[in-house]
Image 1: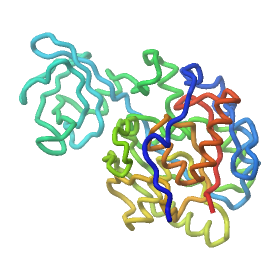
Image 2: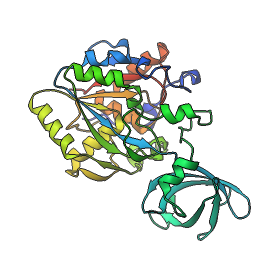
Image 3: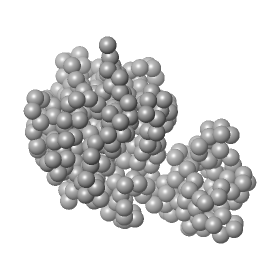
Image 4: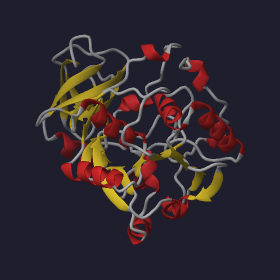
Length: 343
């Protein structure tokens, strides 16, 4: 009989000082907990090429974080903040709105930088949690010129020029994410060259990470949690690379939980592009991913549930206890681990 899990099963004690507020001095100098074999081994991230084999395939999420946090005010002068979740038209966006009192539909907001945002309604329907806005210029241009890096809520400093560089992967390509695929932040050009030298191949997918990735699970019965939706795309070249890798008997190594969600959504639905709200919990049958590079995740989070499904609940909780005891750095700017799929 399959084991059942509740929200409390995914809790753990995390000393606040282990929540990384800044990235490591060098991307690949962060620590790596190698849990791909028997006993876990404490390593440095730049050792990762030696832990994979020639013919293995690394799959990255090439999404690009946009400066999606925008500040402004209502006609009354009341301050507000928008976090743009996605661009849905030439001037139209969907956003989270943080404000003391929601303005009525039709209100024109004056935003910092001198542009305007006109409230069109809620999204995806009249009861939706997000809001549609019409901007008076191209959204990507306005975000780049006037926006702020949408650092996660547990990072306590305001965004800086350093964050604009380090909260972005070196291969970021397709703009649209409001959170970085953080496992990929550890890769630099020298490390990528090291994989190529060893005959380890690379491919990419795109999943535009939404703010829902930080949405807390509030239901004790985890099956009652409503998962957020994100847009993804898997190019034909990546589909072919995965097929070749498995045909040769080698491993598909996903870099980050967003890559896992993308690949397993494709395997589950047959759709190579679209929206996914896949919720991976223990008992899920993985079809594509063999190994996973991932950071350490928040207690009681959907991401902790995903890695528990992948590597086994008891093993993950043991690894997290080890990481806390060994003072690994947690969350987006923290350290990483390498996991093998539970047989």
